[in-house]
Image 1: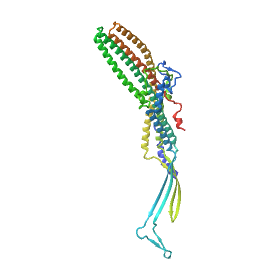
Image 2: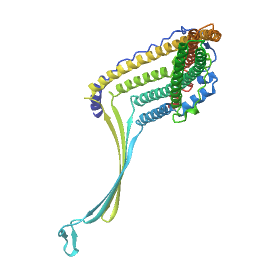
Image 3: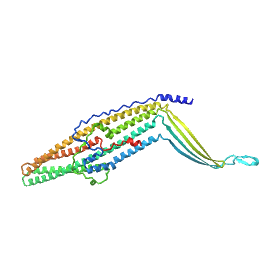
Image 4: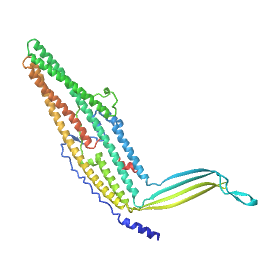
Length: 482
């Protein structure tokens, strides 16, 4: 009879427990190869610690210090530790729950007025009230344990593992971005150092030209306007030196902050006035980005988490059975003795949502829409990874070609300037010709420096876009399953 009654209570709700919306399968189609030049790629170039490929001790030291000490890296580690704890908390909720509870009570009873007594004649009198001190102690241990009949624990574990994986990939993405930012800022600082050295050399040349122009004017061999023009050019060169000094100062301080050494003196971070040659990047295919890019892996984990949450919302429609064993001890003094009693209980609880059904089904539909969004976000992450990687390879190839062309142009511009200055000293050319040749050379130098720095930063972008800077060999799901 009881079983029939339970069936009548459960069958109507269970009949309405239809599965929620089906999550579509994401489209992770990628081209077979990048539509980019292959002159900047090479087999065997490492990706895990790509900054070592530059053979630059300062770069390696700064990146390693940033990954260990920078606030961004430490914050990412703290978020990962939080995710590990949250995963444990989610799984522990399905273990037996309970608390050991105790209490002790002491009561002091007194009588106001004359207490009533029972007169037994020759046997004496017995008071009908109890006065004085009495105490009582209780100790209970009640346990609640959900009996998992529908796979809630396994679904929770899969979702918790996905959440932890997403946190781990976010941690790795933060670190890869930090390493790329440090390298990019270092190369930018070195580019400014080159420009500052060029500006200082230009100011020295302008000062020499101004001296020669003033000497010619004083001896009647040149116009005074030439000397004034040379002085004006010198003032502009000195102003440019001051501006570049401030930019270099800011770039070096920013780099110290990125490396987690923001309070260190500026002298602790030299910036050499030189630009190296960007190394080759790994030869890879677009499909490898699905495993190498931490942002793609994170989007995949978030999709699994959304799917798991949808499954848990569906399971919320099913009944919950709870086992509630308990044991207790009570100590009570009575008639001059200490009476100790014990009790145990074993209960079975049932909770079946009835009036909550409309709300729970609405939540299933909402979570289904969130899962659809996670699918779209994953597809977007895959397409973004492919686009960024191809664009980075194209940009790197273009920058390296520009460096080669501008190197030739800078040599020719310097040769033309030297010839013009020699002719001006011999009285063949006027000052305007010299200044024109100098400006041409200056523009060529600035363009070459900009191209060299751009090529270096493009190589950094390529390493990052290809998923470099971390080791995906040990998936976090394996770590979490232990």
